[in-house]
Image (cartoon, rainbow, N blue to C red; front, side, top):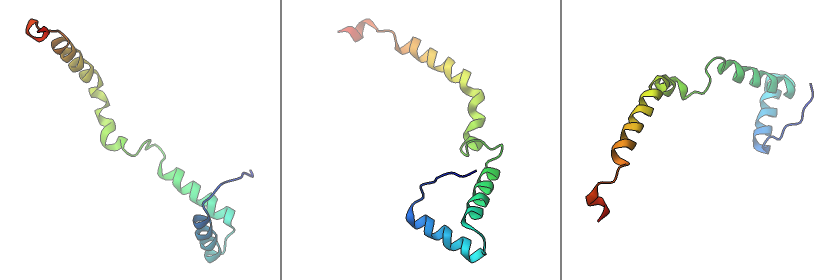
Length: 82
């Protein structure tokens, strides 16, 4: 499939040079780079999820804690009204 890409000039020159050094067409270098990038992210999702995604199970606990805080601090005491 043909497509149009906007690539910064400096990056384009580096990529074009890398393709020439390897003796392959620019389009092949781009295809390889995209394939490598997509393969590296297969099944990973967002990189930060490795560390923080495991905390997802605590979502219900966070909601409970927020509710308690709202109940406790959401009420005005008579001395607060003065």
